Length: 129
Image 1 (cartoon, rainbow, N blue to C red):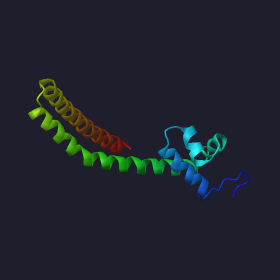
Image 2 (cartoon, one colour):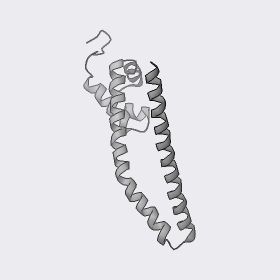
Image 3 (cartoon, rainbow, N blue to C red):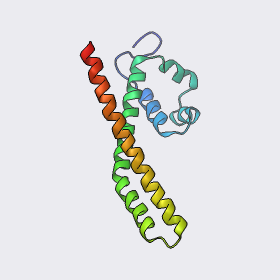
Image 4 (cartoon, rainbow, N blue to C red):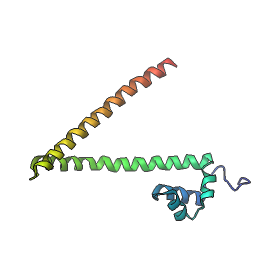
């Protein structure tokens, strides 16, 4: 362990607890309270590459899990909108559902287009180097 109490090769149990709290609590203050870690300790840990790298890795895992949940829910959401657009009793509800379906479709197509164009640019840049 380093002189300042920082393990440079492996996170401590307290650091792992802090990372878990940062991923689940709404604010840094709540995360510190939940993990029973002082803000100054967290500030010091945030200067450590090991802590930051692990925090980023856990954030990415959490984001991927959330993304899979959203992917699973999107078909249900689309079906709800389609049902509303087709059979809602209120015309305003039908119209709102139809607008949502069209808007989401356009956004989806824009993202696909941007990803495609970005891939072309990245390939061009990598071929130049």
